[in-house]
Length: 393
Ligand SMILES: *Cc1c(COP(=O)(O)O)cnc(C)c1O
Image (tube, rainbow, N blue to C red; front, side, top):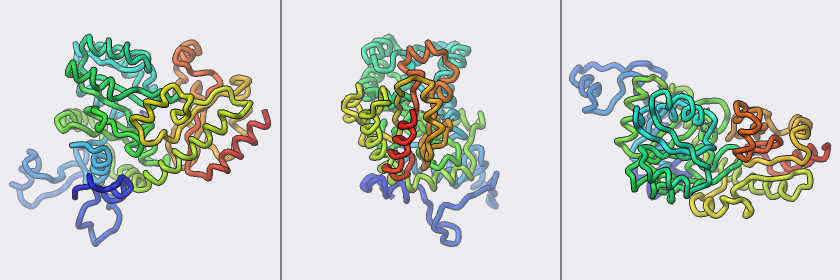
């Protein structure tokens, strides 16, 4: 079916679902089979050599996993898609498949902690040249890209201060030198931002977060240009970071409500950001939907919603954070994000625990910062919860 003429909420529910289903099942079947059998040896050989579509072995592909890959492919408007056991599986396999000794990658100082480790610790071991630029210094990024590079790796909005990176501007610079642009779209989701439509070649997700949406399954997804996705797929197929049918089912099920959840989370996050901005016990609020956020205009141009994550710092520093967070009723103090339940934590304990205080300061992360990932709870209840905890300070 051609889904391009339909809206994302319709696509999230119907895309990828195969017909006919076993016994007319109205939800995606979980196919736990490791291997797939053939009576006809010619057909088996044709599938094994890629001449015919079909399934051979679940490390390569699996019918349940394929439903999920199709959902993200269609939602991101991509030619091809593949999947991984985790978001980091998607990121590491993509970078290692596209790069080789002597190649160069340009990226940002503010990428996700795990991505940052790949850039700083692992790629240099393989003689890949890595240049990390100030995340919002687009002139510096353009200058580094113009020196020649093979991969431009972006993430926007970033973790945890929600910096916004100008995708079309940097894609234009990358295209001039023939570099492939990869965007980590985890924070925005395909509902709020479609990097491929903005010119990127590949987009990847930690499906563990908003796509699954219930904090009960891990996965990673990559989609974009067919030749590039195939290159990464061939690498992953042998490296073995494959997604299993059970988490694929949970993520695909979560994606059926993606638009509903994101709409609610966009609206609630904006309301909460505005409320906290005016609160005397809050010293700073970071949310791209606020007119005062330095990335607001770029976000408005390239996103259709500002997302469900905000961060804020408290008057009184980290000591007040330790008093405030445990008082919240409707928050799990936990590391993840993008769930139906609100999750919060201080980046100095979660995403940026491995950095020194000086390094965090350099990235503009206050010690008293709290990352708040808004769930689907009623926004008035969440604000009351925040107000009651703030009143105790
Ligand atoms: C969580 C996250 C990842 C890593 O995903 P996992 O599923 O935990 O491996 C990558 N990028 C971003 C932006 C994330 O939030």
